[in-house]
Amino acid sequence: MNSYFSNGKLLLTSEYAVLGGAKALALPCRKGQNLEFKKNRTRILSWKSYDNKNSLWFEATFIVPEIKIKETSDSIIAKRLENILNTAKSLNKSFLNFGGEVKTSLEFDFKWGLGSSSTLISNIALWSKINPYILGESSFGGSGYDIACSLAKGPIFFTRNSYKPIIEKVNFSPPFTDKLFFVNLNRKMNSQNAVKNFDLKLITHSIISKLNTLTDKIAQTKKLNEFEILIEKHEFLIGELINKKPIKSSLFSDFNGGVKSLGAWGGDFFLATGERREMKYFSKKGFSTIIPYSKMCL
Image (cartoon, rainbow, N blue to C red; front, side, top):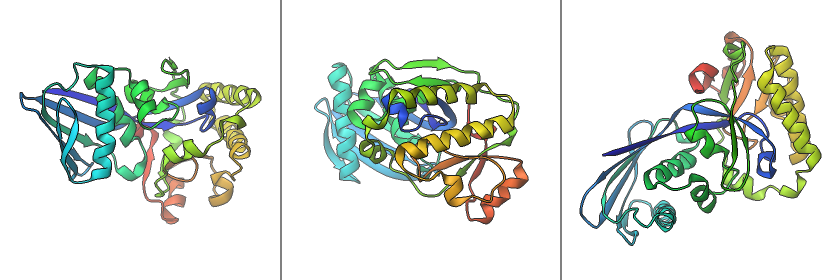
């Protein structure tokens, strides 16, 4: 049996602008997705996917080596998976010449937006021994930072560069990580739609330069108050870029700490700063999923 694992992801800086070449600070998560493959000599590939509660949520069988759907519980998902597997096979002709059994297991809640798609792409790329960025671009699009996170061992700087992105390890471990929390908005955001609807022409050299500077400073600062000032500046800059109000001013204006959107604005997790007791502010407002930095990130 072959087994593969890819990390979930969070984007701390340069959301949207990372698509146009801005440097981003990205955080791989402790939880991710597993893929196991047990080869046999049949012409049938059996696929079963389980969620974070170990419940079967999708299954399909494919005829190989043609990779065509035979039976499935969800035709839309199966067709998408068929296309991904065929793309992988077009890049590696020796992939899936025989059948077998596949089991995927997600460690985080689907609604969290930590990368159920990107971890799948990464695992299939590892399994088929192909470039994950080519597979990702042909499947779901995006900047590729999520795939970089899926394979990283810790925080990274990510700069988009076709199928060979610039990835740098970064020692993002400020002394105030115990005052960083991830709060779930409970509004699943479709990142693919956000990417498709964003106008890349809005990303100027000036914006990239400002965001690169902010990203470097956010990664280097050792003081919480300075970090809060920097993320506020970042929120303002992205807000102007996408013509939206930052989440703090629109939802949490009376919160004393810092608040920053992560990834596509409007859903999934946001970052909040402060003492643990201060996070009760969010739970009282109905946002009960609050995860400390140390439990979320590698």
